[in-house]
Length: 170
Image (cartoon, rainbow, N blue to C red):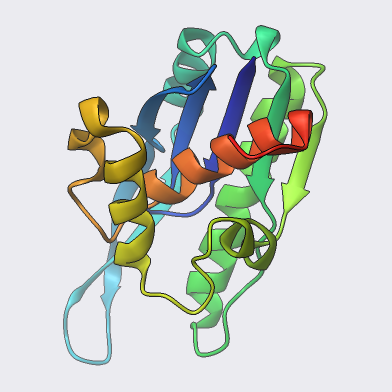
């Protein structure tokens, strides 16, 4: 069973789950330095999906053989600036476009609430997902040592895809 999980965004990731074995890659995001600065005077950057690198990851993951693609159903967050929300939306749209062009497998959208409830992560800090992955995949814990990225979320989305296909606990 081949399940793919995608946590979109500038710190997002894509995960491949083949019968419980996991492989995770950060989303290839190109950072461009902008001429403007933040209110605090820091340099501003803009992130965009690197289409070619993403296509390479999809080929490496044999996207054509995927039984399910689980994509986190996201929206802009209150408090984010309009430019941050626009960048996020652009990345989500780019991911969906490249995926649609690369495979006939339908994308399954899952809310964070649904998959986090399944893994008993509702209301817990983001580090809880990384800890779950380190326990769940002990021989493959290295990708989950960083806790503020989308690797653990993508891995758990792929694992949730296994549940959706079998309707039983993984």
